[in-house]
Amino acid sequence: MPERYASPQDAEDAFYDAIDERNASRLRGVWEDSADIACLLPMQPLLLGDQVHQAWAPLFGGNFHLDIEVTHIRWVMAGDLAIHYLEERVSVPGRPAQPPVLATNIYRQGPEGWRLILHQNSPAPPPPGTPAGIPPGLMPGLEG
Image (cartoon, rainbow, N blue to C red; front, side):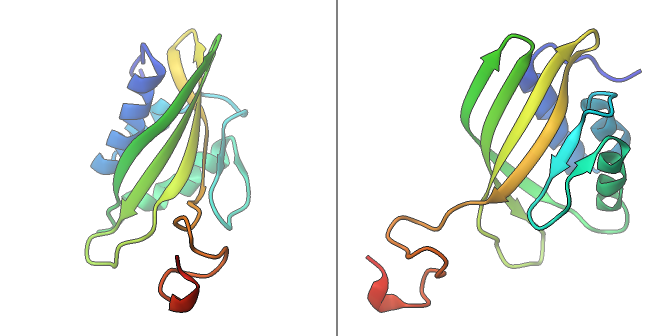
């Protein structure tokens, strides 16, 4: 039986812990058992229902490991829904550092406690003063 999460934060902690521990069954238990769940990652198609679980499965095979540092930006509670806006700094040991991504996690409270129903992320915007679409350092004369 999946763990019961008393708060959206408990479910969120379990989500990122499951990724860190490479624990597929724990990750699956964080998600609501519903065809309504969705995952939307950059340059990927929208995943719904069981497609979400299938897409996360390769993360737990082989020697691949993600380290995700999470910074909370804002939380919104609205009845049985909670929306968490975050910044994720994702790193893979042995690979160059990547820019942060912004994420939205939406949780719903049901009979089994709080469960994740949406995980979405996108690249963070460039630092202030960087012209849109131009990576820092590419055009030194334009940087402020």
